[in-house]
Length: 155
Image (cartoon, rainbow, N blue to C red):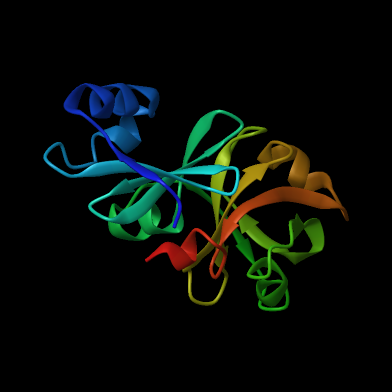
């Protein structure tokens, strides 16, 4: 089993200070926080749920954060044909996008199924939303975490 480290109050404050305010204010101040490293990925557990993971030295919210804490990430909606590929780890290609919020390049976003409006993945925008609207093909969103991946299986 991967090693885990329970965070002290000071370490929790430091972790919360690394998050955007819109994320940190939703977290419980009186919760149990611990970090677990699996493979090369650091996961931050809050009350035994993996709410964040570290990617390129930035804490990224997981699908559990979006669902449980109602974190408001910008959205990209994909058609039903794209869903099976994305939940198997594929990046989001432009033809599968049916709607999107306004966001910047490299922004963390949630990928939702257009029919159910349920988050199926967390990704990083490879372009800003205006540029994506002009594309006819190609990769638009890098998928970082998705339903069924190793982070999802930590519960």
